Length: 290
Image 1 (cartoon, rainbow, N blue to C red):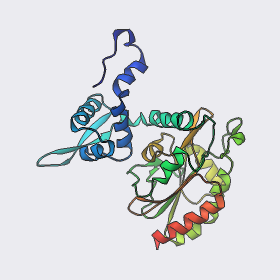
Image 2: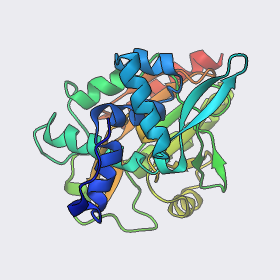
Image 3: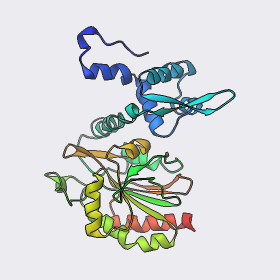
C-alpha cells in the first residue's frame, strides 16, 4: 500500500509524488493504462499481479486522482480505469524513466539517437507487431488534433527533429542517428502520391511543437500531417525509444506500419538506411491498402 509522507518531508514534492506513484505496481499500472489496457482482467493478465494487490493499487490510484473509473457495462456495473489529466501529466515522467534506464541500465551510457540491433530498445520495438495503437490524438501542424492512425492503413515515421525554424542543440550532429530528418520528410513527401494511390496514410511524428512543425511543413511543402508528441502520449503508449538532447526528449528514428484496425503490422528500428525504410514502408503498407 502507499506510504504516508513523514512530517519532515511534508513540503517535499518528490516525497509527495513518491507516496502516490513510488510503488512498483503503481508505476506499472500507469504504464499499462497508457498502453491501452483499461479493464481489471486485462491489467491482471499484463502484469501477473494478484487480484487483491491489483484492487488495492487501483483503488489507491483512483483515490489519488491518477486514474478515473469509467463504467463500460450495466447490470452489473463494471468499470475500466483510464488516466485522468493528472495521470496523463505523468507520462513524461514515465518516458524519462524509460529513457534513463535504456541508456544507463540496459545500455552502456552513451548518448545516441539510434541503437544496436541487439539492444533492449530494438527488441521492444521488434515486439510491437501484433499490438494495437491505443485511441489517442496528437496536435497536428495543420491545426487541432488528429488520430495518429489515419482511418485506414497508416505509416507512422518518428524522427528526432528538423533544424527549422528553431536551431538544433549544440553538438546535435555529433549524436549518432540524428542527421537525416529533413531528408526523411522529403523522401516521404516525394513518395506521397504512391502512398495515396495505395490507400495508405502517412504521418510524421516528432516531439517538436506544432508551430515549429508548421513552419517546416510550409517550407518543405509537406503534404501529410506532422504530429507533435510533445506531451509524450504516443511515446508512452508504444514505449518508443527516445534520447535527451537540448533538455528535451526526442524520438529516435523508427517507422511503423499500422493496419485499419490500429494493429502494428511492421516495425523498423533502428533505421540506418532512410531511403530503404521509405521503400519498405510503401511495400508493406500497400499490401494492407489493397
